[in-house]
Amino acid sequence: MQLIWVSGPVGRIRRVNLTARRLLMFAGAASLVLILIGVLLEFAGFRIAVEYDPKIVRHVGNFYSESEIRGLKEKYETRVDEIEKNLAAFHDRLNDLDELNRKLKLIATPPPLISRQDRTDAMGGPFIGLPSAEGRNLMSHVEDLHQNTSQLLKYSDDSLNYWKNQLDWLESKPILFPLKGDISITSGYGERVDPIVNRSSFHPGLDFQGSVGENVYATANGVVEFAGWDAGYGQSVIINHGDGYQTRYAHMSRLFVKEGETVSQREKIGVVGNTGRSTGPHLHYEIIKDGRTINPETMLLKLARR
Image 1 (cartoon, rainbow, N blue to C red):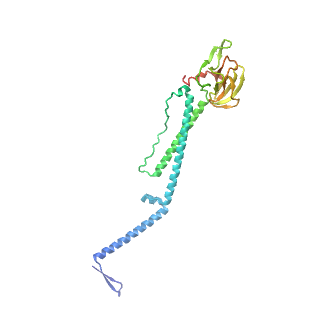
Image 2 (cartoon, helix red, strand yellow):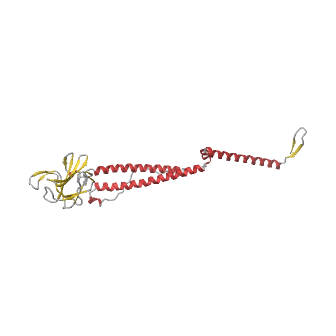
Image 3 (cartoon, rainbow, N blue to C red):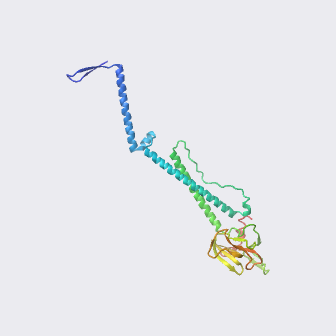
């Protein structure tokens, strides 16, 4: 095949022989040029997209810019730090709950029974499953883990606050014995024969057997209303626990508290004695509700399952 080229009306005539080989070489060169132009255009478009709208590039090619990678790394590290802090706080809450459990057990169970109880670690709360990593990127997994630990921390805070309130309520009620060790009641609440005048009388409390010098303990949190000498009760203490409750501890030989002083449940307030109207060493104990004595057994013995 021959191609004739005329450069003008009087121009030179050129003849080019087009062989199959030359046509193939021309077609190959043209294709290569077009491919190079396409690559250059795509690269230029990619750079522009990275600069102005990285989301398009990430969506199309799953590419991340250097600034995005830095941002993801910083966000990941921040979330990991928050997760570690949440887990540490959650561990602290568990320790606090364990301490509350120990205190509640001491209140609700008489000492002779505590050592015979089987240990059963209490666990519970809402089920929060961990997300599957399959098909999800690391950042999404970290975000879910952060949310889950935050929910667990909130649940532990709510539980801790609830049991703290329960413990505060129990510690404000006179539900414990004023003496420790083996408890022996020598005179109950109600009608009895007075041991001094040998006549029927009303006994407004319980008499506990005790030895001189044995420690006497506050049966609930409160404020000391009276601490001193009373003709009938000898060296005695009255504690106001709020909500209409008071307790009286009588016939002691020494007092460790003063009027206006705040005392805690199980705090030593004095020692057993034989002062006042008494026939021998013992502790007289009363519970007063709204100005009237009540039978302490309704709060002490029933609770302790004795």
